[in-house]
Length: 326
Image 1 (cartoon, rainbow, N blue to C red):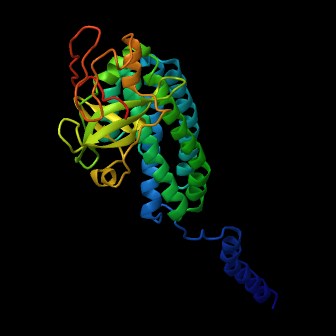
Image 2: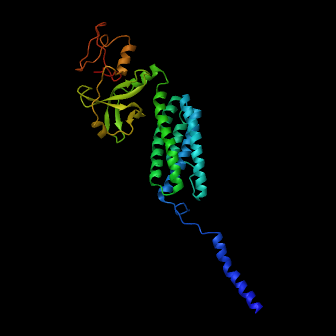
């Protein structure tokens, strides 16, 4: 009788042991954060965010070595610091979720980095800042989409928390770009501006937006704020004039492209009107040449040439001389 009791007790212990073990180590719940279970949106975000961080860090280090402007150097240093933090945070999450992140740049970003590496000084400054504007516009869209549509709670929260910093970066580089454009001095800036006169400007869709007729300047700093385009007409006569934000222009060789602007959008723009407070490159050129419009050959509203009263000759207006404000 005693032996039967011992066998029954042993059997009870034997069959209850697995149950006790399962209670102590519960089976993990299947979620989108498990390896192989993460959504396509989350995986794409993680991969692109990792590449974005790597590009920003490497490009920022180049800025510290290649840039001429101190503001560009400081911005590059700022990018290295901020994106190193987000990169480390992303790597920590990836390890927890058994995600595999890219360890090197994709071909697109590597080409951009190689192009930057071959530039120095002012040329580097301009290319780096333009690249930063484009890169942060893309990053803001990427993180905003993840914040709205992401399924993984951790990645979604990471995107929400990082988005304000990326938006701040974008504002900073946009503010920095026109400042850097004017650091080479008024004379050199004027020459650079004048080289734009008469050149065609194209939209991102490839359509011609118009020809550069004048550049509007900030009255205090002398920095360019807008570019005036002639649309239609013959040699500028009878043309409709529209104004574009100067910071949207990007020189691609001899071709000037206005980013984020299409021909259809320009068609809908109201005509630009000069007023008494308008300061333009044409007005500054008149002052620099030591006389007023009455002393030098200029074009009147009808497009006719005025004679130079002091010399008895007519100054010819070529593609480097904008039309006078009307």
